[in-house]
Image (tube, rainbow, N blue to C red; front, side, top):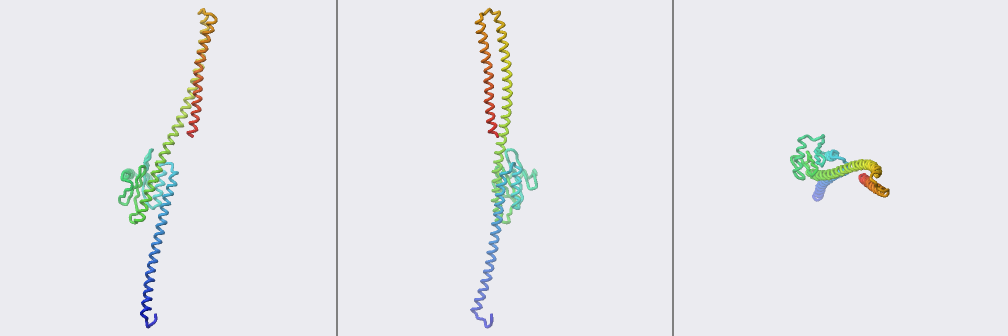
Length: 271
């Protein structure tokens, strides 16, 4: 400004300079807030993405141990440390990020499983469901926003893990029942085969016994003083009795054939 200074012009320029400083500070604050919001949104999206990835991969976990590893991998992706215990029908598995849990860690996991759905102590937080307990050792309590997100995401992680344990247990039961059914079918088929062989042997033995009986009966007719017609009638009665007895064995073989068809149907169902 050149002298002499006009008071109105001076006030106008000072006011404009002050407004410029205020606007600059506001823009800087808005930029900082926008950047922080964007970073939070990206972090939140990445955290949810890790949770969704766990849910997808958990479906392919064939056993408790592999499921424990997937849970720990998700915790690690959050930059956290923890341990997990799965309590299934077949066994209890406890795993930390350095491998199998120590007896002390196993005891802590077991005790935490009775402390309610979410239990916070010191810098640790436990998440408990019927079949799984997760303990996170370094929750970010100094960052309330991230702490809240982690609390929610880890609760969902535990819930998803629990659901997969239930599914695994159901699969184990079905697999065991299938194996038992296959073994039962095999044993039944073997037993039927033995019965069939035994029936055939008994039929041949019975046939020989009846034939010996008929031969002996005809020899006895000489000493009984019977007429020829009487001898023929008695011999015919004996032959008919033998035929009926042998027919019973044949009916037993037919039953065996029907049982074999039933076993084939069971085989198809089991496969």
